[in-house]
Amino acid sequence: MPRIAYFGPSGTFTEMALAKLESSAVFDGPVERVAAPSQGAALDLIRSGDVDGAVVPIESSVEGSISATLDSLAIGPRLQIVAETELEVSFTILARPGTELAEVRTLAAYPVAAAQVRMWVARRLPDAEIYTSSSNAAAAEDVAAGRADAAVSTALAGERLGLTALATGVADHDQAITRFVLVTLPRVAPSPTGADRTSVVLELANEPGSLMRAFAEFATRGIDLTRIESRPTRTGLGTYRFYLDCVGHIDDTAVAEALKALHRTARIRFLGSWPATSATGTPPPSDEAAAEWLTQLRKGVADL
Image (cartoon, rainbow, N blue to C red; front, side, top):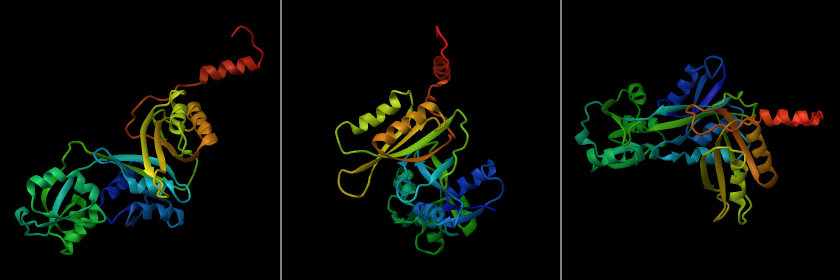
């Protein structure tokens, strides 16, 4: 039975994402779930050999990319993304039995969750002080332990801890979605499906035009970039890594050519090619006709 880590403790949206991956037959059978206190800790369990994979959040439609996940993927021994799933995210306000919403003075919340319910809290709990928790499930545990009056959490965490729901479906934005990825040690990428995502991290020379030249490797081959983001390397001011997602698979000729070209001029870390849950953008052009034309030329065929 494979051991799969997730950003815990039990009751987080990440555990729910792991359950969704299990139900979609990403794994060959049942898995042993291993809770980790952070995204980085979950990924380090793979590197140490304690688990076979990890599920971590990577992007929110409301708050953007999850920086802790990106940073942990960019440094240390290389890991690889092999699958993804998405969850519509809304929150439950949990409290100990007998607590009324009007009595809430301290509200435990994971920072990403707090940002997604900011307007609701301002309207309904304007005097509440935010108590920072390490995850959505940990916020519920903080309430159960008496460290806060209420929590921005999940219904699952409330059920497991015997807490009462003061409000459900709490979200400032309709259809807020978070994308989660399954990460393993490097392996052969899943077979292309025609609706795939490829992700890389670039470290470029600090010279004029280096970023433009990197982008050109994709643009000239008709590859659709769907995410472009920079994060500091933490080695000094003005030094950044660039995270790029594109439509396509490493087995697509256009994508493979772009990666080879980038490898000649930049430090590149391949994060994986895998089936996209929500196919967005334009797939890279096929080279079948051009490849056949070249084959015929090599055979000496005339009048092509």
